[in-house]
Image 1: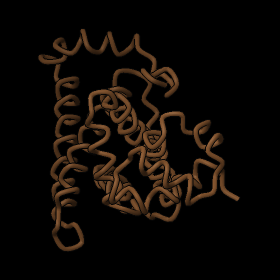
Image 2: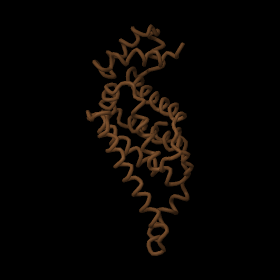
Image 3: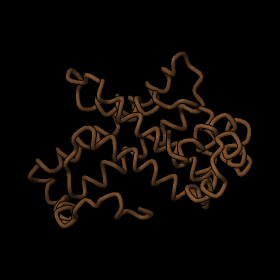
Image 4: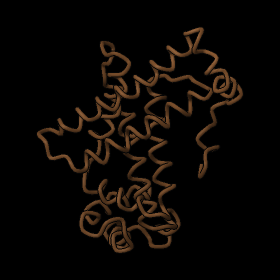
Length: 219
């Protein structure tokens, strides 16, 4: 049998489309799942907000599981990044549930939580690609990819094109922007005339060690 939070989440999905990630949805999830109310409030002290967080994390877990079946040996690095971002959207079971979650995490009191979740997704993608950076690049890669993921998410939520092709085209353009930034950084560092401009940032980078997720704000 699945754990209580998973049972609640599975029961909540059918109600989210009508009532969002709300108290009404949480109450309905308790009734439909049969989970003891005291246990439900124990595993989800914030009610449906905690279920929305679990929903996002379940998507990350589904993406990681799906990566094992991917053959990306023929793809360029930028294409691998785009493929994993796209995969994260493809494993989403319910678009409306994501739309409702986006609305929830746009509220001031939950904005930091939403940002942390997106950062976590970016971190999972870079880790899956074998990223071993432990300096300023650790932050910059995840910050940039978080922005790419979020902008693609907003585009995807409003996309009604066939098979979501407009979203994937949008994503490819954003990934191109990311790789362009990396190319510019590389050229600056390799140019003896421009390299002094990076002396400060590079020195700072050498003093920074990538933290564990638990060390991040809210971790």
